[in-house]
Length: 202
Image (tube, rainbow, N blue to C red; front, side):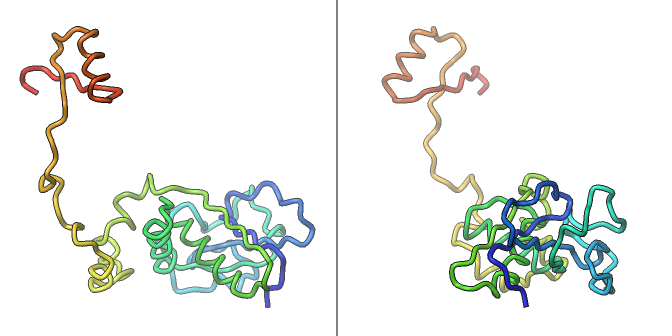
């Protein structure tokens, strides 16, 4: 049973500085298919590849000191990527899959904390490099990470609408021939701090 005052969930390649709290326990997160977890029995798996990036390896990196980790938890793609989507949907945290792995493991570990104890989770990546992966319902469904009915129940009425269906007013623009003084006057009058400048062809 995990019993500690703080769980510090780290993506393994970001180890560096240990927190200066004597009874802090480090929980390392390693995906199924990776060989970083200790004891070695944790790494026995039929998984040979995984979709979550930036976490886990098929070799032990020189910069990783596994002795710093008190407890290892294994993660899997489905839980990790669905957690990342949940964090985006519910918390507005634009995070990648390894953040989902960290949060899923943290929730597992934190379930055994007592009232008043703390859990700190490090979320080291963003959604920037994964826009065509777990953000895509189609990509997730192709890998059986979500079902189509799960997808539709989380959809809003506007989810499949195109931007062209929005009734937007044409933006206020100015021609290149306008004077700076006139452009400033327009911005002051309309309450804008910028104006697009377009030529006759738009």
